[in-house]
Amino acid sequence: MKFIYSLVAVLAFTFAGLSQKGVYVKYESEIDAAGEEGEMMAMMMNGTTMEVASSAEKTYTKTKMGTMMTMEMEMDIDGNEMTIFMTGMMGNLAFQGNPDDLAAEEEEETEEPELELVDETKEILGVKCKKAVLTDSEGNQSIYWYTEDFNRPEGMDQMPNGIPGLCLEFEVVNEAMTMRYTAIEFDDKVKMVNYTVEIPEGVEVGSLEDLKMMGMGGM
View 1 (spheres, rainbow, N blue to C red):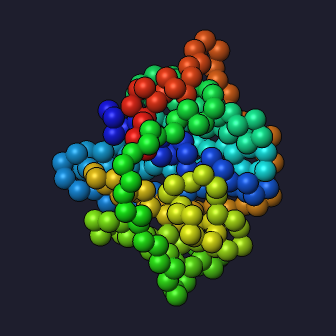
View 2: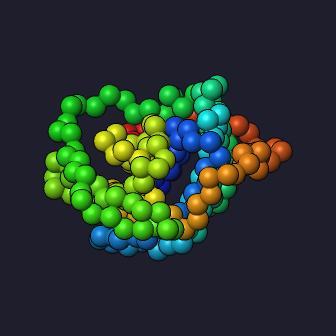
């Protein structure tokens, strides 16, 4: 179960700092699995989609994680407050608080991954995107396709600092599998009033520290 919570942590932080006004992106996923655990997770995560709506004031994400759960996250950027609601195999869970409470504890210094901006392009939803390749200390590579027409989201570990734009395709890599997210819808004129986390009556709201204690540390 720790793997599941770690993946939730990745998705919760994916767009915590996106500050474009009225931007909406919907991604579909493709999974490459390795080993028995990876193949089992891939079956459960098959069909995962992610929606993101963001303005300068707040960010909203909705991730349907295959057959496991649906997670909504709303980030009040000015107030630095995050609200998360999850429903699925674990029941209904809600958490709220300062997103800094989800930060991983300081670890030993490791070699920084190498980021290369490649002279290669392709179109995603009619938008010209450039390629970037991230290589970690073990030689594992992740591919990113980004557009310079929109700023790179701040606070997103899965989009490296050196990428000079918003990724319309990116990878989330862990030991068991690689999830590749590709944009299938894009709109830069959304109304943020339509994107709000609604917690059902009767659902107890815990702290983000509670969520971390359930296994979301070590991002």
